[in-house]
Length: 173
Image (cartoon, one colour):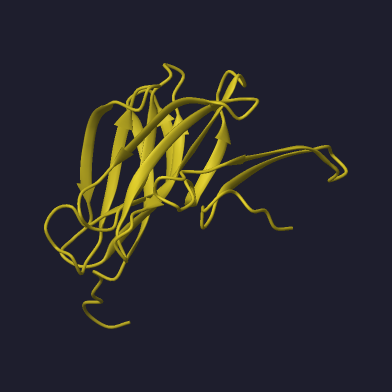
């Protein structure tokens, strides 16, 4: 299915389906001033209280190979409640997220904002429900690292998993 949405090159579509896969409702969301899809390569999840949904991913800039990490929160009808983008002049993207019971969110992805344009660093960010940063951490080594998954273990710990090519086998295999 295709849509024309002004001069926009891409958009994010929300589909509400019944349990048999029938489309009940569809909503298109776009960023016409930028022309690229919010939510590129990210994830959409329902909030803990099941009253809103949140989307993480990247929004591509007009400069080739540059994108900013994004966090959007929507009501269940697809209307924007909060919208934040993060990043610098390089490529940054969030791949996954989890919400806490205190309405904070842990976001995970990759960034090049720490100065190395060639190698990604894993990036974990904690934000409030409006997307304001509470803290952020760079994870990984000196080579290519991407954070893909994040989950909460308990009130004091989170677990992340990443891809890395910063790996050496020492000794006999």
